[in-house]
Figure 1 (cartoon, one colour):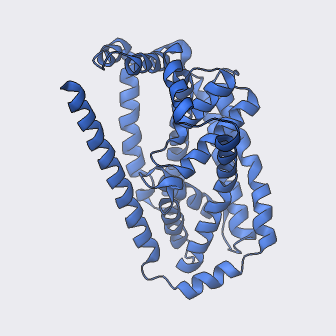
Figure 2 (cartoon, rainbow, N blue to C red):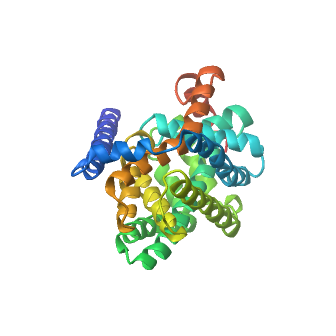
Length: 331
């Protein structure tokens, strides 16, 4: 009976999550498409140079170096740079192909299959990675929001981060209580996996150096800002300041945090277009630039994830899914 209630609760949560994704995506596309001049949109896109678009694919490649260094650091060097880079590409590719942010699990499965790091330990590394990103985005959003007088850019994120940090500090202070809560889960792999994750997060010796982690994360986001600035000027032909490009980057990044469809389609563009509207860029030109920028940033990841799933026998389902369960309690 309890299993049936648990399954029903999980199904309700999944349905609510899917509904929220559809609702957010629908609202974003309504914002993007209402009062849009499609003729001007096509005209602005036709003005892009194919050569510059292809060049942008090469210019974007170095942007993935800091995240790869960071993930290798979070695994204690066991992933190696290339293993961490593969996990970053595979995880981001899966996030752009499948719903529910499954790319985070995909990173853990990739590290487990290619580097022998348990999925529980890998997920903890991914957790610290995402937490550092959220804090870096919050830092930039506060600075940029204050500069442009846009409180909406950082106030919701500030509230969300406060909740996350309170929960995390409670885990640090009372790890035993969280372990006892995990004991209420049905006995088996799920309980063992949850205990392993809580144990990895709660032990002081297994936490990363926060100063170095944040430094790498800030450098990573500076790279995204620099690329966005280059893209908006040399591909889209906008006359835009570096601070304006930072606003676009962070607004699009916040859009990607929202529950949305795979690749944050619509949410990324809505954030970028809202930022460009503050900079007095025409909406039609903004939408074309946002979609082009988004495509350039995800095409490498999708190609790599497709290659891995088709030829390297690694996926988050089937055999790899069972691997994740088996290695979950090894942390």
